[in-house]
Every structure is written in C-alpha cells, then in structure tokens.
Length: 110
Ligand SMILES: [Ca+2]
Ligand SMILES: [Ca+2]
Image (cartoon, rainbow, N blue to C red; front, side):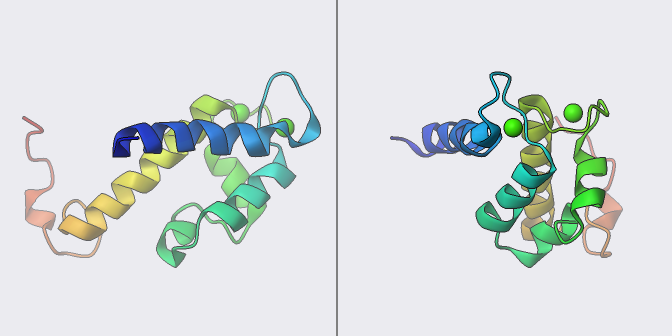
C-alpha cells in the first residue's frame, strides 16, 4: 500500500476500532473510548499536549464540536488534521507560536 493509502485506512480503522467498543451501530467515541485512543495511538508529548490528552474532559470539550458528548468520525478527522498541522508547524517553523517563521504568518496559500 502506498503511504497515503495507509494514512487514510489507518485513520478510518483506528476510529472504527475504538468507536465500536460499546457495540454501537453509529460509531462514535465516548469519553472512555476517546481516552483509550489518546493513550494508545498517540505517543508524542507535544501532540498529546495539543489536544489536552492528559485531561479527558478538556480533550472531549475541545473535540466535540457539536456538543453531543461523543466524538464522531468528522470530529475525529478534524482532530487528526489539527495534529498534522501542529506537526507541520513544528517541522517547518511556520505558523507556530514560538517566534520562528512568525513574520510569514498570513502568507498566501497559493
Ligand atoms: Ca462508541
Ligand atoms: Ca460530537
């Protein structure tokens, strides 16, 4: 499988694997399931910080955009994409809060 194939299937498979823990037909991550994903599928301390993985209430608040108390696939994707942006910023020094590259904030995306 090519790398992007892997990324995509991983995102879907991880979500479904954890979301279906309670056997629901409409897979969503409840608080316990979200906790497990964050504990087991993310190791980088910076990424964990980014989504408040240490405080499951905070993390849920942050990710649960439609306030139904669970994280659906759309919300999960947004989380993954936010983390990817976080890593991108760290790697390129762009758009982050820590000075470097800050002068380029607001540059055109082309
Ligand atoms: Ca569930
Ligand atoms: Ca939700």
